[in-house]
Amino acid sequence: MQIRSVQWQDGRFGPDIGTPEASASLDDLRTAIPNCNYMGLDARIRCADGSNECTPEEEVLGELDAAISEIHAHGLKVILRVKLRGATSLLFVPPDIPTYLANYASSIAYWADYAQSRHVEVLGIGCEMSPEMEAADWSGVIAVARSYFKGRLYYNTNWWWNTVLRDVKLNATWMRLLDILAISAYPDKLISATNLHPTSDELEYGWRNAYVSNLGESLPESFHRFSAQHGGKPLLYHIGLASGAGAASQPWAYVSDAAVDLDVQANWFDAFFRVLGSDHGVFLDGGWQTWPDKNPNNNEFIVQNKPAESVVQYYFSILTPSSQLRNLLIPLGFVGGVLWLRGGKSKLRG
Image 1: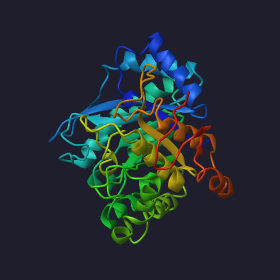
Image 2: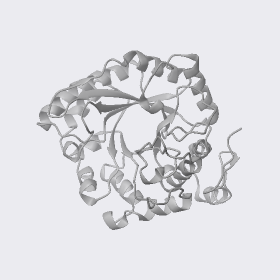
Image 3: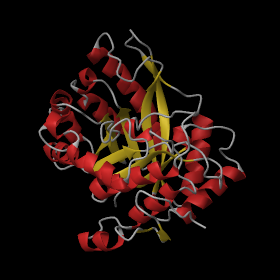
Image 4: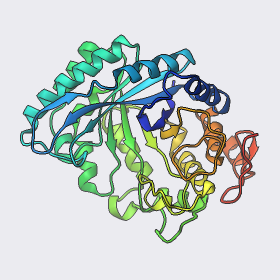
């Protein structure tokens, strides 16, 4: 089964967890995107610049417990992704990588044991680390994780924009020991930074052409080669976009004062799915709030009750669409049971 996941409140938790509002938000998700089969959550490992030490962040256990129980009660599976907290950048390099990885394995043991005890289905053992870290040997970390956790394991690497970064990932033979390979798919050169309101066609063109001169192949071709290099492992794309003008030129960023632009978010998702999203798993970063919000007039990453929700609903409903079906429906703008006009205005779910 391919993963079709959204993330609950960017993996963070607050007073809404365990309340009727949180339950109602999942009721809304099940109605709005019925083919969503996973919900994503984040766990943390604390680290610090200039140190080989790291420890699991235990302060959120109560909230994690409540979130996992609520998700399972709504018939969804759980992806628990482990991320770092404390260093100035996820790309930090510890003084001694083998020593750090030994300490990191102890923290992963904690989260793997926790995930197994809470019946989590998929565990991410790391996220977007530096090339130096990814070039190291993670086989010990994976072995420790598997000794506690019996579900599927993955690592979440960042996308790449040159051959040096690509080749680090291609040569990381430890990735073949995982069940899934995840890619944070947030390329920033698909369109010009001056194009604040790109259409789906413009974004699709960027996916297919923007990085060919850098990589000698398109990004989709490069992503698929990455999978093939590691034994044909299934990919899990982490994607998202704020619904603000200009968001597509810095897709990872949230600009609080950006003008609301619901169509750019919908266009981003449509272009992604047209190019990449039908043959591998998808994880929407920060896609769903912990309360049912019917007001779509915001510039945030959430997709609730926005045009992007209908786009996601449609593509999640067809795991591997035939080219004939895609060619028939998409040019007509028929997406998710609503009239969705490519590059134009959208009609919200009722």
